[in-house]
Structure formats: C-alpha cells, structure tokens
Amino acid sequence: MKARVTVTLKTSVLDPQGKAIEGSLRSLGFDGVESVRQGKVFDLEVAGEDKAKAEADIKAMCEKLLANTVIESYRVEIAG
Figure: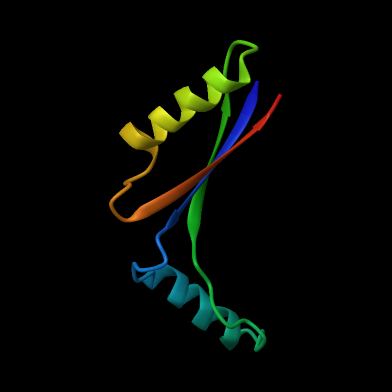
C-alpha cells in the first residue's frame, strides 16, 4: 500500500524559507504570487491490506518522527 505524508508549518508559525522563495519568484518576474509556504513530502510503501491500520500506523510515525507537531501539521493520503 502506498501513502503520502505532507508536512507543513502551522499557519501561526513564521516560514522564513517560504518568504525567501516568495521574494525569489517575484524577482524572477512572477508578480502574481501572494504567498509561499514550504513543506516536505514523504512517500511510504506499507505492507498489508488493512487501510485503517496503515493510516493509524502512519499517523503514529508522524507523531513520533516525521513531523514536529508543536510547529508542523501533517496530512496522510493512502492510495490502496
């Protein structure tokens, strides 16, 4: 089973890297960009057929390692 975890900073947390990217895009002529928030993506392959168990296990992975839940949010997507 394949899963994707997307981790981003919470909206209340300043994102200096996102601001730098935003400034760089503007300097390259992309004036329509109003805001950039950067994050990270993890693609996982998980053994088994139980989607609920896989999702619970992946959420536990996020809570323990993949995301700093004090300042980051995460989203789990499972594709059978």
